[in-house]
Amino acid sequence: MSRPLVRVPLAGVVAGEVGLPPRASHYLAHVHRLGPGDRFVAFDPQAETEAEAEIIAVTRRGGSAHVRLGPPRPASLRPARRVTLIQALGRGSKVDAVVRDATELGATCIAPVLSARSVGGTRADRSGRLRRIAVEAARQCGRGDAPLIEPTAPLPEALRRHAPSAGSGLGLCLHPRAATPLGAALRELRSEGEVVLVVGPEGGLTDEELGLGASLRYRAVSLGPLVLRSETVCAAALGALLAWGAAR
Amino acid sequence: MSRPLVRVPLAGVVAGEVGLPPRASHYLAHVHRLGPGDRFVAFDPQAETEAEAEIIAVTRRGGSAHVRLGPPRPASLRPARRVTLIQALGRGSKVDAVVRDATELGATCIAPVLSARSVGGTRADRSGRLRRIAVEAARQCGRGDAPLIEPTAPLPEALRRHAPSAGSGLGLCLHPRAATPLGAALRELRSEGEVVLVVGPEGGLTDEELGLGASLRYRAVSLGPLVLRSETVCAAALGALLAWGAAR
Image (tube, rainbow over all chains, first blue to last red; front, top):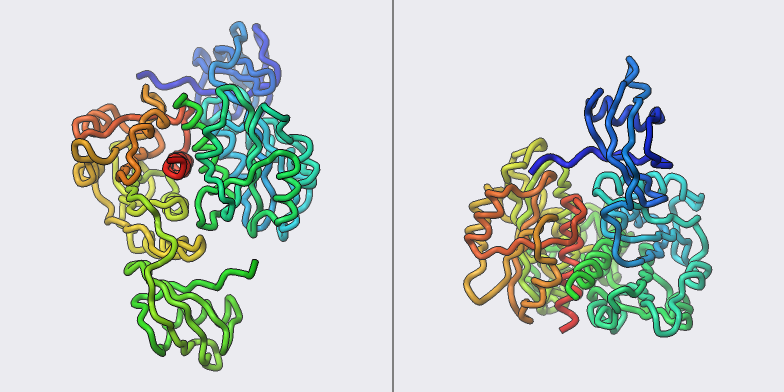
């Protein structure tokens, strides 16, 4: 198999000749050592489009690449299902790693939240930084879009905003003491149904938070009785969802 | 709910009074600031036993704790299924993180291997270090055993050693271009059946390696067309397996 083409994120993919911004130019000319005549793929994660492209010229220091873009088409690899991850921040939850994992594993929206046990760590809104991490992860795994990163909000606000409506979608709070196994809840998943996963910080969700979730139609589900780290829960639950969806 | 008792790994859990080794003593007296009268749980990951225990005395600098162990019992939380992870080493595969994730997610054996594309990184056998990481992860998540860590070996050797026998168990090579989704293969899983997961390094398994796997009854399965990092594949596949198993 031939090597897949290098992918470069670009805001606004339109057919024609264009000078790339410094970051994209550096990536092509220095990281991958591509030059005039070499081909790559430009993708616009926000518009979910991509286009084949060719380098025409690179300035001496590689600071700027002049390229020709072909006609844009819908991105070929996008998640089949809408999946929102509500992830509580905390000392133990390495949110950068969570955003990378969740992007690879098909989350379409990530809502960083502050919960009752979100102790330690920064409370500043880091959604700008997380957006860049998501676009970079999308580039690396070949995904043609990137998850929407919401601004950091209190958990109750995010629970209300993403609450599943009656009869459609599935809202799931991951909790080691929940009686329902994740797999049992996934049995009710419809082929196109949206899923909202809620993952607590180190120390977990409080009974009050689980209660608020229950009143908003979220179900508490478990990946077993062991106490998993926040980032492990995210990857394991999204992996189960991916495998489940593809099996139908 | 009361706070769960602190857990300390100990080689050989036998009822009676005993002086703890420095590492365990330090953990109780300094990390958790426990003293005479405080209770904890000692667990032996190798014997898969545990016992409630009480601190009798701590020497002045906390270098040695004298404790009383109750009668040992089988560890309460152990994986229900035998799951082996054959994980190829490589620059991109952070094997420490893989061992931590796999321990939390119920792997019972981890075989670090060198595959054709295991470039970069150290080729030295790090299984001693990985064993310590597995015991520490078991302690943190509350698991009463720890996965067996095999010495680093060439991939073909590990594939042969763990090959599923006809009619029992499931051997699965994770590969983004495989036609069978992981979820479809998991449909064939029996409730007590052993599973062997094979995860390639950055760059993936070669066609030759997949061919050798096929000749040994491993099936190539996919978590979708995106190119996932090695450590993401591990957590996602083990998560799917956990959810699947619990749903039956």
